[in-house]
Image (cartoon, rainbow, N blue to C red; front, side, top):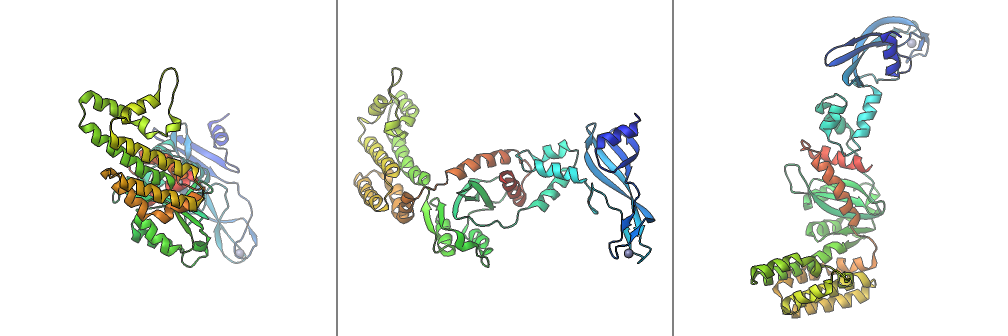
Length: 399
Ligand SMILES: [Zn+2]
């Protein structure tokens, strides 16, 4: 088999004739053409096989023998004898103005849906990071449809300007639908204003947020009929912080060995009491009792945490939840533990959205899961400083 025939086989392109193959140190050049046939004129439809002239197009293809590979395509231009129109012959592998073959484009497109870094993709296909960036720009997703149940959360960004990006999730499908550059009121308003002339806004029935005031302020305006609720995880976190701060305060006054014991046993305090492990090797209930027995503030803080977790996990009736939450807030106040002040304030300020969560099954837990994948993209995204491309990569990876 001649080399040209072998290359023709390797190319696996339909209707392509290889006329010459040149292999250089860094690159392959494969000279190709397509068979001459009659083409119908795009203007009048008459068949013609009158060749007007030739153009040569250099097209990047997938690597061959692990080398950058160009197809040097000698392209015919036909002339219609009926109307005089000049037009290029058809081919199946490259659009008219493209610099890459269709199949290279599809491989790049596929890989951009993964979490692999752009630099790696560029290397894999022997192309430049610039080409990958341009492709990403072209793939930037349009404004997505709004879901019935919308989750809004944030994640730490790595692009220059802002610390936190905002992630919008369809909590029924579990997929992110959009990423915003930050979580300021101005950004949120500008974003949702894009939906103003669509029917989309009324589609949203439930919104799950954390205790970020800008979310509430903006969403209340934009979605006046939607139910806004606080994610339970974010609610519980407040009381966990308070308990942790009490532990840190009381252990400060302890001798070093005891201080370390307290620090290492902290997970026992944070766990729900009915999840504590008691067996032949370990008795976490005993450890817990030792930790809190002689320290009234820590004991009280622990009990407040336990009671709140019980309310959150066991009560699903909003009316009952209101009674319990009110009485919990009163107990926390009566305890006079300074570390609970911010927790009490948060529960007071956010009482209605918190109570809404008691009759709903939705939480931002899914979004937290998405954040793990985003972290991988972020880690692989050295050089992905451009927010819009970062957004595109994230959305493609969940598509
Ligand atoms: Zn014609």
